[in-house]
Image (tube, rainbow, N blue to C red):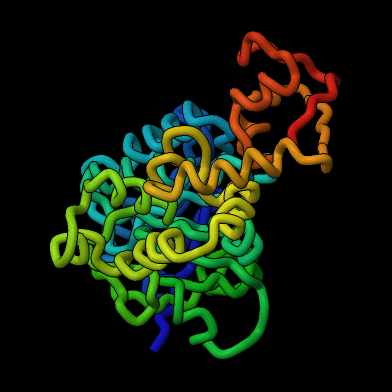
Length: 338
């Protein structure tokens, strides 16, 4: 049976936790937002934390992310670690990914923050709405998952795939003025949830599927049963990609390269393995065909990002467009990309 969990922040003001405790099974508290600055700590974090600890209410934590660079993501990790140091938690520590303008960094932020929390001995997780999970965090596994989707349905609607479901932002709980977020929680407090499908064996590595395939091809996880044990519940996910690369036609793999599925540079070469030369011949042949394509450089673009976007290489872009310095490109210039 799903447990009743609320999540709160300074927006709920001063909460009467004595009244609240008998109406809930747990609470996820916002510790702050953004980078590691004390003026971005949640105003009620310390009080909410101490009250929940005093009353024995199971606690989780989240920080609202604004990270659009790796440096900011690392600072947000430091922000969380500073505030949770010395405390014990029964629910995971979540990074809240939903801020417009940070979509491109979502996977990297999740990795930086969650891996950092795991290294520090905490159980990490990601909070995001249905749109973000579908479009910006697809393929991210190995961490606890919390989904926001304000809709009706059975309490078990998201039991397969997530540890918790935030189903409303208009909940009413005696002891809290105004509305608060309401959640159905599927995972056991302090344990991984096998039934949710998102919380895996503690041995299962984190990261995107592409990262795990890359590490596998670099022999980080060994072979045979050793690989299976080290990859844990991620094994089938990784081997599906490796087996596909081994059996698919060169033209199919070339189309997937153009779509950016296998990354760029060293990552692409390692992931494609023995198929690399064969596939890149098709890729480059397609790039030099009559169906040329052009792109106008925007402010903030890098040649590496453009190459990845159009499934080619930095060297190829330089060759087509006479660019001598890959680090020196100009906005509003039209360049050939295919």
